[in-house]
Length: 85
Image 1 (spheres, one colour):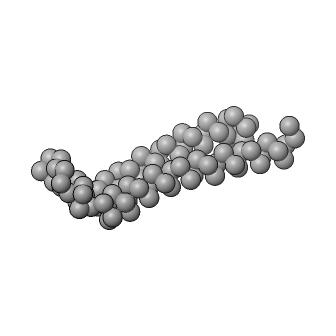
Image 2: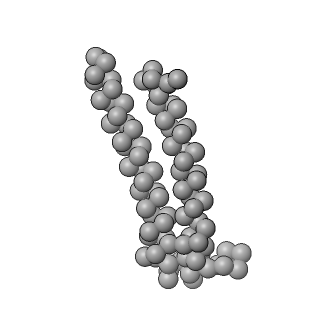
């Protein structure tokens, strides 16, 4: 496999990872925090409605977790393709 093919495969996997993480972020912020808020408000956690929690704090926590997941995935992908530092 040539270097150009390897880098094309590297970027294809990188974009796939980004799409997965952005989909999770979209679901947690837009779907759970806005569109499904009324259905989620039927569930209470710690005295707070789940829809309210996602809108106020949950999506932020999910976003921070996604940052760490992205770093771990990219470190693994960089090592796999020999572009790590």
